[in-house]
Amino acid sequence: MPTTVITRWSTGPPAARVKCGAKSIAGTIGQVKRLLIIGIGAGDPDHLTFQAAKAIAAADVFLLVGKGEAKHDLAGLRHDLIAAHGRAPYRIVEARDPERDRTADGPAYTAAVEDWRSRRARIYEDFVRDELADGQTGALLVWGDPGIYDSTLAALAEVDAEFETEVIPGISSVSALTARHRIGLTRVGRPVHLTTGRRLAAEGATADDVLVMLDAHCSFTGAGDDFHIYWGAYLGTPDEILISGPVREVADEIRATRAEARARKGWIMDTYLLRREPPAHD
Image (cartoon, rainbow, N blue to C red; front, side):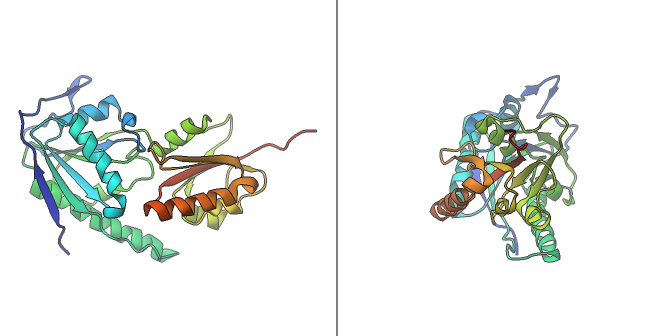
């Protein structure tokens, strides 16, 4: 099925070249197309770094891949960031994110994700080929940090087109979670395992500190009684929810809160840290 895109034009003075350190973030070699993958933070507009703001100002064309009306507020924040930091003239191209089979399990789950990622790659390929002129700079605004639990870079690796890329790091939901709970992610001499709710359910907690991303089935309920949980949803947004405490005491509260929030908004993005606490001494 062909990708449907909507192109919006903005008028204004030519965009200025923006310096970042010793080089221009908008610079190109000859007429090579350039694509900036910009981490925009977990949801708070103030999460945007100076480097990311400069990258937005350097872009000629933005690609926004949306997830439908239910998540219109996610698209709204990206439009707001472009309006605040973009330098006209620029264009915004919008495409609908391909649907993914969320009922698949086991080997079928991996196949479903790979299929979705390949279809997302075709959107990126169409954007680079059809929407970027030689020498222009395009931009993708990525939630959190592009290098942490995100498929953008993996999908771009499948794109069959000639272009240069630059990745702009962002404040991830992991950083937002630990900051909002006022805790450190790491402890002396102990590893941190970053995993998914699906893997946690299958394998259990494999470290004393386990960071879990997007657990639709509340797999933390299977953690031992010695685990403490630091949970957060919609981090950095006005809808942010934070709950922490011993898993055995707050598991039901988190599960009920999560279900209510998802029913109300139509979607939820959450993450949590499971931390095994040492036994108390009498």
